[in-house]
Each structure stands twice: as structure tokens, then as C-alpha cells.
Image (cartoon, rainbow, N blue to C red; front, side):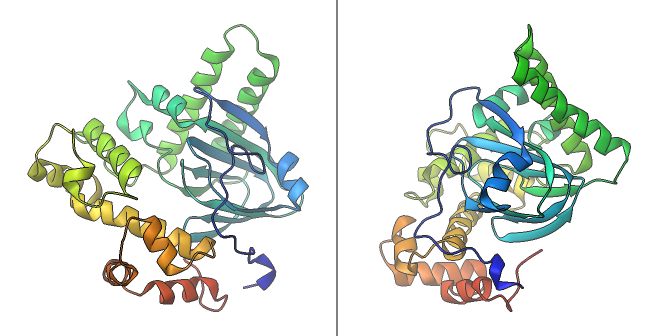
Length: 304
């Protein structure tokens, strides 16, 4: 791997509203679209790993290509391609100079409002980070390009019915993504709403609370039923879902920040870094130090 593509480490992963802009709480219903080149070209086509709080993104690469970093994965792609970035997912890009397309940024509450009343398999299509490549010149690419162009026009001119039209176009985009690659979790099964509530509770509390009883407090479900629900939707028990989220956050810290293992452990609610190391090794199959060296060593490779 070319060492020039390795981004200098920061103490923490930066949080932005839009890339390079101070992170503010997303306004309810926030929707923004811009061309891919207008911001990427300012940064020499290198978008360093970062996070958005309460914002989801869908990127449309109409021309060009590059490499996407989505949490633990590095994925090379060529246009035409769609890139889905869920909220609070670490992501970055190295674009080929001259790449073009659009970047659509949506408040998570806006996506949730659009998801109500539509098929669960469609509603949760933006929950999984992924890169979807489309056949060049095919009907899918043409249709996706038209959706982004229509959203851009509506937001630019603000004509009567703009909000309704934009919402319809975003829902059509959600359908297109779900048809290209159905979500990995079986969200169309019974209990989808309760599963989502548990996922939200895990996301809100995993840094301080690691026990199922604490995370799921207030949910109208017994532990046995919750385990069955988690197995149905994720193939894991409730405790394993919580552990998976803790490990993912630890891996993000090990890859993208200069925090020590002890600092990462304390930030995830562990009072004993040695216990955290044993926990991580049990769950991930290697120690934090081994994981960090493997992902920072260009010869060690990255998942693709």
C-alpha cells in the first residue's frame, strides 16, 4: 500500500456537521446536497476519517472513483457507485482527481420520519455502511443520477411543494438502495420496531453501561425474548450485540486515533485496562496492540 495514503493520526476522530465545518447538533429535518467535487477538491481529493453526529450520508460517484474507508474496511471502487454512510460511522475517502457526483446529507430524525409506514426492508436500507457499484450506462445508474439531480434542483429553487418532492425522491433512493443490496439484518421480521429501540439504547449507553439489564431498562420485553429477538435480527444474543458495539468503537479508536489502549478502555467505561485487553482479545481474537499494528502496518493489509 502507498504510504502517502495513510492519514496522520489524531488524538480523537474529528466530528463535523459537514466535512471541515464545526460540529453542531443537526437541525431537525436537515437535508443538504452538494457536488462531490466542490468540497473534495478543496482538500486535494483527500477526505480524512471523520464522524457526523445525527447525520447520515449517501454519496453518488457519477464519474471517477477512489477508495472509501468505512469503519474497519477500505474499499476501492470506480464510478458509477453509491456509498452509504450511516450516522456515527467513521468514514473517509481518497478520490481520483476530477471525480464528480453528489453528496446527500440527511438528519437521522428525517430519515426515521421517512421510514415510518414503509416496508422495513426499505426503511433500514441506510443503516448499513456499504459501497454499491452499478453497471456503467445502465438503467439503475441513470435512475439514481436523476434522483440526485432532482433533489439538488428542488433544494436550490425551493418551489411550492419542495419538501414533499424531496421526501419522495429520498424515499425512492431508499428503495433503489434496498433493491440493490437488502439490509443484512432481517428487519422485515416481527419485532422490527422493538429491535430498533434496543439498537438505539445500545448506541446511547454502551460507553457507560455494559450489562443487558442496564441497556434494556425500560424496554417492554423479558431477557429471554430479547435474546430471541436479537438472534432473529442479528444472529447474536443481546449481550453479544452490546459487546460487538463496544469492540467496534474500540477498533475505531485503535485505527483512527492516537489514544493509548488505556485511554480507549477508560473511554468505554472499563475501570481496568488489563480487563479491557482480555475482553477485546476474547471478542476480537487478538489483543488491542496486535489489532492496531496489523491495521497501521501497510504490509498488514486491510479488509476489503
